[in-house]
Length: 366
Ligand SMILES: Nc1nc2c(ncn2[C@@H]2O[C@H](COP(=O)(O)OP(=O)(O)OP(=O)(O)O)[C@@H](O)[C@H]2O)c(=O)[nH]1
Ligand SMILES: [Mg+2]
Image 1 (cartoon, rainbow, N blue to C red):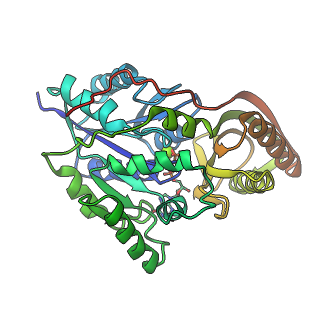
Image 2 (cartoon, rainbow, N blue to C red):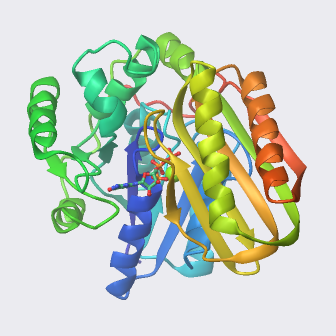
C-alpha cells in the first residue's frame, strides 16, 4: 500500500492558509490525484470548512480545540477521508493561533503512523501586515508581546517560511522581510508567494515534494506564555439566518458586515487578527474578510447572488474581551440587516478565550 502524503501548512490567523490549501488542492487534482482536506478550529461552525467544501473539495473538520489537543480526532478524520476518498494527498490547516505543531502533530504522525502517511516538509505562511511590525520590534504591532511570541514560535519551527501576499507587497518591503527572516531564522528557506495569484507556487510545490530531514525543529517553548498569548484573543463563531423583504445583494451585505465590525473594533481600541463571514444560499456562497484593523474589507469569494434569504456564519478572532465581541457582532449584524430591510436571527453563537493547550502527544526529541 502506498502511503498518503500529509501536508500541513501553518501560519498566523489570516495569513492565507485556507487560500493556500485550496490552491494546492486544485494543483494536485489537476495531476489526477485524490485530495482530502482537514480544517481545524477552537469552536464549531467554521467558515473555512464551508469555503473549501463549496469549492468542491472533500473536507473533514476537527472542531473544539487545536490538532495538537485533538490528535486522535485528527487521525479519525484522516481515516475517514482514507476510507471515503482513498486520497493520495491530505492537506491540513491548523488553527492560526497554534504553535509547537512539529512536536505535537508532525512527530507523532511520523512515529506512530509511518506506514500510512508520508509527512511533507512543514511550511509556515508569513502574514506581512502583522509580521513586519513584529520582526521590526515595533510597538503598536496590534498584539501584545505574548501574541507576538506565538507568531515568532510558528516561524521558528518551519522548514520553510512563505512570505504571502507578494502580489500586493511593495518590493522593498519584501526585500526587508527576506533580510529580517534570514537574520531571525538563519538557514530556513524563505519563499515569496501569493496564495491569491499563484505567484511562487511552482517553487513551493517543488519544496513540498522533498523527502528527508524535515519536520524536526522541536521548539523550546514556554507553554505559560503560549497559553496566555492565545487567551488574549477573543474567539467568536456565530451562525444566523437572514430574511429580507426583498432580494438583496449577498456580497454587498457581507462586505457591510465586515466594514461595520472593523469600525466597531477600531472604536473599541482592539486589534482584529481575522474577521470572516460567509453567506450561503442554494448553492451560492460568498466570503468577505479583514485581516488587520487598517486593511480594506475584501470579498475573497464573491457569490454574485441576489437573494431574500441566506445562512450567515461569522468567525471573528480579535484581541478583545469575548463578551464584548459577541455583543458587538450581534449589534452590527442586526444593524446592517435593518439597512437592507432584513432580519438576522441568531441560530448559534460561541464566544470565548481559547483554553490552555494540552497536547495529546509531545515529542521532546526527534
Ligand atoms: N492579496 C492577497 N490576499 C490574500 C492572499 N492570500 C490570502 N489572501 C486573503 O487574505 C484573507 C485571509 O486568507 P485565508 O486563506 O482565509 O487565511 P487563513 O490563514 O486561512 O485564516 P484563518 O483560518 O482565520 O487563520 C482572505 O481575504 C484572502 O483572500 C494573497 O496572496 N494575496
Ligand atoms: Mg483558514
